[in-house]
Length: 481
Ligand code: TXE
Image (cartoon, rainbow, N blue to C red; front, top):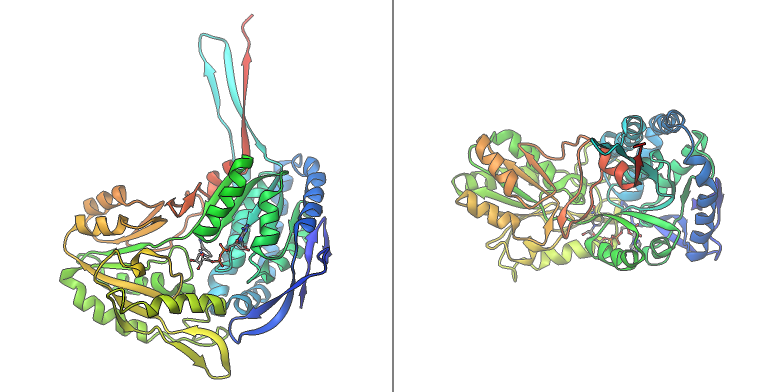
């Protein structure tokens, strides 16, 4: 399979004729080659997007909404193909791709197809001065969307759908590690009637194609999801060019369990919040803090449940945990697990690199639970982004809160308790963009999504995303005689 670029409605080879290998994490084999684009391809895509902008930004809301809706339907029609492609490309269980990734990609388009019809702006009347101010929310022009490998189509569509809905033309780059579904989507968008040049997909590495997107002077806004280090690098280039920036970065999220919670729901959900998608979700609760009175019981029950998870071929329907996304990522995750003794921790289960029969070159690690004695150890401070969680007891609400907040990140937090007042006190004080009480990853697409501290700047979702992808212009009219 050869994956080209989508520029001005055509699939084209990269100008320099360079290609990258794409590997299937399940077996480590190369199965596709990907356009290894550079600045010249980005320049070409931006000029196509600029040409398409006047017409696209002037389509009626009804027309734009209808095209987005057709794209959602096209994703649903192709859901089996897309789910299989996602699982092959990323290593995630096929069941997960079918249940979560692909339906959510369709939902992203459907949601913003509706949201744009409800998007409104403000007016401010100055009584006594015969003046009225109103705000125009105008599309920005050409915008850049750069997405990561953990939820490839889910996060790609989460960015491009609001950007397109708001009337922008887009230069999008999926991760070079998992590019397949984004490129299938590009073709579906054309078939659904998206005019040529409105969505351009540039493939390639972050340090060439990605860097060319963020430094192109005509690209006025960048929406990025990925690692915090990369986010900082992007800001270094884009901020002095005065680009609008939305950065959704890493997390080291606390999962705080009080003794009065609904134990069985908590246990089931904690298994998911720890190991869904091999722990490769920025929202995973990787630091588990448990009230001391139930700590031993939880430790026993949790380890038992974790050891019963089935690691294996992502295509098998019984597989709970598939392959990690790449060999270099597996090595990163394993290197953290290997620091356990020197970080004062104890491995309670898992953490082994596994050889799955017939898939010996795949990237598998058994889900790992580490008991730690201090929240300041590296295992509790740095984002591992794999099937690894830490456990620690606490005695008081204040202590749990202090440890939860004592990290550089601030994306999400989960609190398990049936004490309403306590849940509200915790929600108020937790330093994170999202707090879940007695649940995890329950998403309503209208809500603001994003983090504080090293987890990023800006918010996605609902009106926040439409605001990000538009420029506010105030018009002041004096109508006095
Ligand atoms: O992601 P990168 P990496 C975390 C996780 C992981 C770490 C590094 O801890 O181990 O980040 O992962 C593009 N200019 N998350 O290095 O590099 C790149 O091509 C423009 C958390 O694999 O951040 C890809 O499309 N673009 C996370 C995208 O950025 C650049 C999800 C993300 O890749 C670029 C993934 C540059 N200079 C990893 N450099 C989350 N928040 O969910 C890279 N890219």
